[in-house]
Image (cartoon, rainbow, N blue to C red):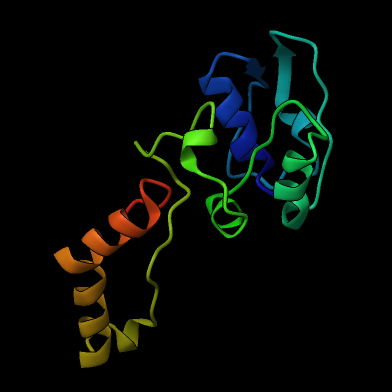
Length: 135
């Protein structure tokens, strides 16, 4: 679960104060464990990520944190978001990782070149309209 990520998001909005040793990359078992205080009184209801879009559509809560992949497959538009996560210094990115011994293979270099190409960036921007940010 991305509880540290959710708490960081709320903290950046000024809605919560985090505990002194807060690390958004920690694997918190509950977001409450990372929060020292809240600006407003609210509680978290933990919902399986696969069900978040349905829960939002059924108005089962006031605020939902839905990862982009679930929002996209659930046909949610970024325009429906009241706030979105900043991409500046964001530790939550997808990374191409290969074994050190394979890093110079022609197929790996070709894949990296394609992923960083102007055509792929244009495709991502056109297809996902800001919901996915190209490298």
